[in-house]
Length: 272
Ligand SMILES: O=c1ccn([C@@H]2O[C@H](COP(=O)(O)O)[C@@H](O)[C@H]2O)c(=O)[nH]1
Image 1 (cartoon, protein in one colour):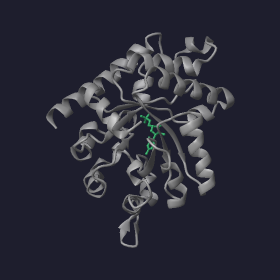
Image 2 (image 1 turned 90 degrees about the vertical axis):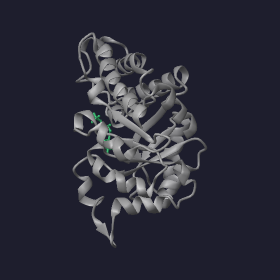
Image 3 (image 1 turned 180 degrees about the vertical axis):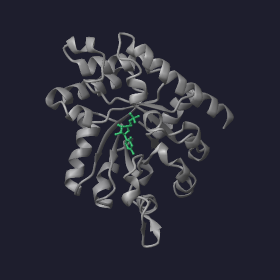
């Protein structure tokens, strides 16, 4: 998907909500376990109940890989369902890949071509030649881990390396790579206080922001410095939406949670 089409969807829906499809068979409503494909049945119900409120969906591949072949099949069915029924919705494979060049190319083909995701999350640690293969595909986006939402982010990402914090070096250096205009970045909602400086280095790129809801990040704080003139934010919530109820009303309950976030976003956009 072209970035301008994502921005158009955000304006139309007055939403920059990304719903994380992190399916855990121990948390989904028990009645779904009787279905032939409980993972896909859950995702389909969530998508059907929320697609008018969200501009993106982000399955985290770990939650599918954990179930082996049936997990991969459910992931494939989910991305096909989204692409067929909601082609204007941005899709993110949260797979956190990155390897030597020829291997990264295979990862890129797996997620952009075989599964037709619009984007994939990529770890920057192996550097330019591990990331550039993900940037070779037109209208596809690599979302680079910049400053993550977990506590371990302070182990390396904020450490000073040759006079600058490592995450800032990741931001600055990555903007010099080939097709850098296809880059987006992950910044945790729990690190909102860093956003002013982050926006100084990358004023225009989209940020994928996980960590609101279950991890305690604040949507309002993220928006204070994270918003740019084309919005430039995708705020992810996974558990806070998916597991609002594990009864028969789970999809309705998920919609209520998604609606509350979308309303907050609408309000913020109207004042921006
Ligand atoms: O820094 C990061 C990068 C990725 N994630 C992922 O986002 C979701 C968050 O789920 P919640 O249930 O809304 O907390 C999950 O898939 C993480 O692996 C992140 O949280 N932080």
